[in-house]
Length: 266
Image (cartoon, rainbow, N blue to C red; front, top):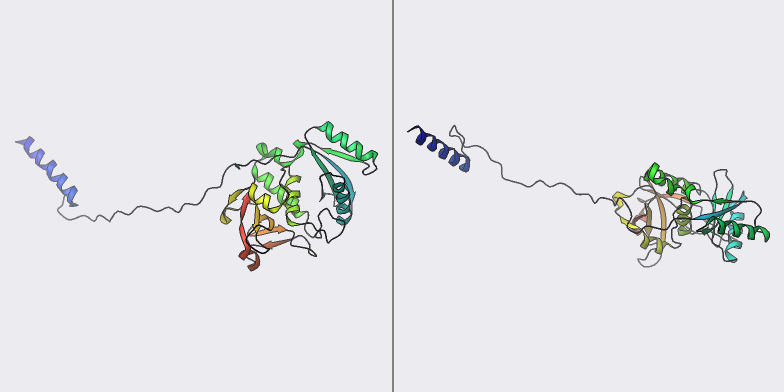
């Protein structure tokens, strides 16, 4: 008899549970099921899929007080078939880096040849391990990004010059971004279109310092302008002939309308 009573209680409990009725006989409130929606934010890639080549050994020479003189020297080297770029050193002087050599001996031989030709006097060979990118494993990505920003900031106020004998030649936007990355040890392509195709896509909300941002400032929708993102919606770029390298904002109506996307290389 007791077993039968127990069985009835179990059956009654299951019925109550199924019908949503409590043991007291009162109906319990069961809110309608609604799946939780969690906003999903696109996660950034931890590592780029298209790893860019790193800089090898480079010749560093010259010490110019004016960027125009460094630009003229860069143009002379380019006319001789040499890759060269100038930059603002921490000393406040403008120096030039020449070539990208796989071996130190090759860089030394080229430097001595330039010295014999009278194009340079003193020089210094920059080794791959001296670049910021080689220190990422110990200091982290943040270190590299900060070094890229520092390099970009060193050009603020510099006239629109890029390897040219006159301001008309221009330090174009992609020349600036290429130089900034090369100074940190990443061999970025020369043109804005190549830089756009090489990097990994980044949503505007996910941009980090050191990423590059691209615009269509010419006719059509093709990439024609690039800048270095420095955080808080701002970027450093070479805006055009007759202007100096400066900081602008993505909220600026002109750039907001022409924004094409961001790319990361880190």
